[in-house]
Image 1 (cartoon, rainbow, N blue to C red):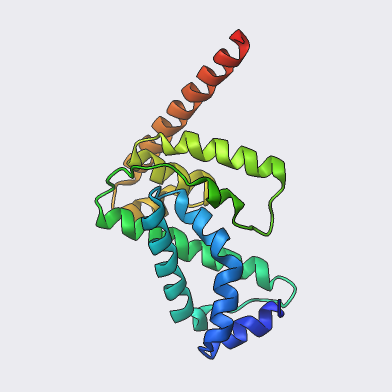
Image 2 (image 1 turned 30 degrees about the vertical axis):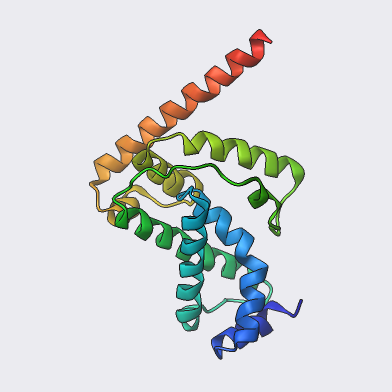
Length: 189
């Protein structure tokens, strides 16, 4: 694979060859971010694709501070676009719960920073988070996983800050209860 600064420069010039290289190299990363919010595979793929279109459209706004950190900064920028595109989709569907499982082949899409243990833990956590009501799930993902504060979440989801805090508290309580049940079941075996 060519160097990331060269690929990004090609994307900046709207060269489809470089856009394809970047898309194929980071599609797995992007799809996993989208799956934290959207659980229907076909919808998640569409949202990830929409996110890449936004990324390529707004790539001129991406300015890495140093060549050494280009990938880290670019992945953060891509992550933010994927989260916002997912939230837009949730708003469009009025936070309707997604139905369907996460396809097993999704876990085989390469991601640059995965170990076997991280992959298993990530899958278990996503399954637990998936069981949360959509409004709790969105706030939990935004706050705990993506690092947004309650004011930013309130603006993104068009809810009061107090509702964001309440939804996070309830989501944590539901997840704690789910973990407790799993532990109790494991102790009985």
